Image (cartoon, rainbow, N blue to C red):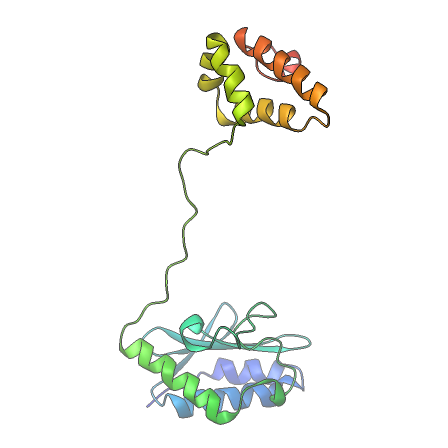
Length: 202
């Protein structure tokens, strides 16, 4: 048998009038769908535990929220409203904002099954680390190759300093301006100077 937590009784009692019947129904449906569920308070709002966090609910000034810990594996992406509020069901202001009781029970049983099978939510993709690749225009590279000293300095520069030169040249609004900037870049690079060398402290 599952357990109930008196702190959740108090949480519901302190919630706004519109929220109380929503929270009471959600609580009852969770217990019906998972009789072994155990209640607790985490991060100041009600959580339902079954071999880990099964789901949670919360009440705010103008809406409620309800969601599954493994929501991305339970609620179809098209129906998932997690961008609107916490959980997968968006901003719940009335019972009509929730799926039918039958659908909710189906979600809860699916969540229980995932926990029983030890299925984990997919890991978030980590940002790629490593050296950044800077796209250097062909004409810029061609000029560098004609000036070995400039090429050596450019290749030794960190990403940020290379980017300053490339952006300065490519952002020129006219062809003559671009040519002038390109020529100046080659001169400065051959002297070992960065794009903003005039403003850098010696």
